[in-house]
Amino acid sequence: MKRIIIFSAVLFAALTFNLEAKGYYNGVGGYFYTELAPYGTWIEIDYGVVVWRPTIIRTNWMPYNMGRWIWTYDGWYWDSYEPFGYITYHYGRWFYDDYYGWLWYPDYEWAPAWVEWRYDNDYIGWAPLNPYAFFSISIGIQFTTVYTTPYYHWHFVRYNRFCDPYVYNYYVAPNYRYRIYSGTKYRTNYVYYNGRIQNRGIDVGYIRTRSGQEIKKRDLIRVRDSRELNKDAYGKRDEIRTLDLKRDELVRNDLNRMEIKRENRSTTLKLDKVEIGKRKVLTNNKVSGRSLDRNDNVIKTERNQDESNNVIRKQVDKVQTENTKNTDSNTQRKVNINKTTKSEIPNQNRSVEINKKSSDRQVKVEFKTKEENKVNTNVSRQVNRNTVQQKTDIKRENPGTRNNNQVPKSVERKKVNTNNSRSTNTESRVNTNRTMEKDNSKERTRR
Image 1: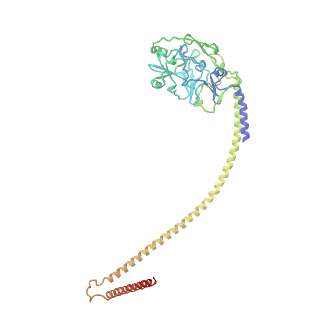
Image 2 (image 1 turned 60 degrees about the vertical axis):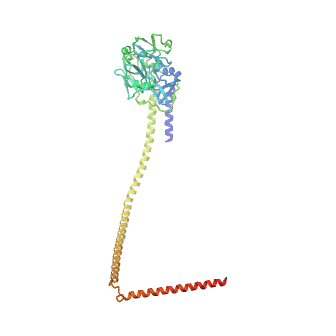
Image 3 (image 1 turned 180 degrees about the vertical axis):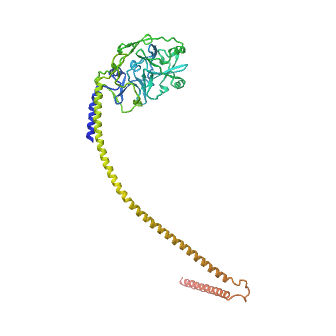
């Protein structure tokens, strides 16, 4: 048994080592890894599922915090002032974990900003979309599970500060955030137009009327190299550059090895409900005319992994069959023992019943004897009472005679006896007094 387990573990490790050495992780290509590694840490939260955690020194940091909103031909675009924002705010999703903090979940679809909106007549707010949200061309944003973003993950500002270059200076205070959140309406408005995902969000006309400002539409220039992004003079430029790469370019991995931090603590994210970032066999894209199939290396490694899993399963099945045979033999022995014990149980029950019957008979006999003794004692008591009653009746005959002539002889005899007893008592007293005097005289002579 131990040899089989050790052999399966070694086989599994040998086959997966190739995968880890080449760095094929779910949703992470070489481009994302190299661009974001200087600004944070890559963490494996589950087998093959890797996310990115930014190195943030400030407390109470949240995504979509440092930047500004720009109205473009593709809708509301978040122009980030952070060095990693050109990737993390246009690809993938953000979610907050109670242990890790804010984490970025990679994905390959570009958008001007992946946010959800809330608004009323005075305030407008936004929050990062979570990984349960995915984009559908026919419907827009859909959710794989019911999830509500907490109110403290939202930014709210007044309409006249929404397009300000320093909008982060006008966010509503945290203690006032819940009051606004509870009175606002929810909205997401993502569409697919001209081969691109557009974030329409809150209508620009409504924001113009509420803010009283003229909002200018700007162009987006798409570049294929991060070095072409102009990160200077954010408030002066009218031309906005953004990084827009195709899926096959982001998936391709030219690295020999990735430094991934593995944590033993599980995440609060329900990974089985996440649809984004998964590498599936996709059909060719009509817009780009290029195939979006996975890399051949990834397919080979997955096949090898499946084969290793099949070998391990077969070995485990053999061990389980042997264990089941042993358990069946043990259960058969137990059944035979139970049969023998069941055959002995009726005899034991008969002896117990006989003992019970004999004990019941003895109890009945003892009870009868006690009852008979009670009857005899009552009879004897009744007889004694009758005899005493007869004697008293005899003594009470002729009760009214008081003359000396009518007194019976028995009474006279009693009187004589009493007189004799009195005389004897006096004589005894006299004798005792004499003896006392003699004793006293003897003691005096001795002295």
